[in-house]
Amino acid sequence: MRGMVGRACGAGLVIGVLVTGLTGCTGDAGGDKADEGRKPGKAVAKTCSDGSFTWSGVTQRDRLTGVSDPEPLDEGGGSLQNRIRRVYTPRPSVRADGPAPSPAEILFSLGKKIGAIDSDARTLAEVSGDTWAFTDARLPAPELDDGRVSPHAAGEFVQYAGVREVAADFRYTCPDGRTVSGHARNWTVDISGLTDCDERPDTALGREVARHSCEQAASSSPSGA
Image (cartoon, rainbow, N blue to C red; front, side, top):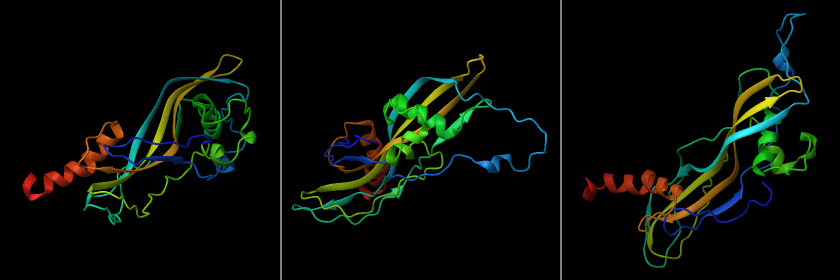
């Protein structure tokens, strides 16, 4: 999202970087196909178009999506060769307990709530690029980056990937008092990083990297058996 470029702390000696995780992929969240097959004259429950959202229980946390096996390097470093394997696939999700606005409109409201979308934007038509992608309920999971990284130091290194996932509960209230409740989830940024298994992790994401890669490698080695 706009302005979301920074450093992501990982485990121990971390070279983490946050990059915009939504790459402008777009798509509708429903469409006319939802009306196909309905019998003529059958009433379809709809919600109002001028209601208001109330959000609660907003959480944002970094989720590990991929990690490589640890790779030892001698003094002077070198190029890492192990590929990143996927451990979690993030997916947008919108659920409601009755007639509700479209998933895109719900995610648009959530994006404004967390600051991923400009608070001055009043409609979906006013967003584009990365911010538009946040409203796409069919947004595919980010690819795992298999670009080769070359640390310039000795250590037992692991490459990893992740996303910053956001989730919240909503209530949509119409002017006539009708309400519908639900839950929405998406992510705002991709995370890529490098950590040294010889260093102690100091973040939740770093500890997850260590559990998935460093500790498993240690327990499977002859000395850790």
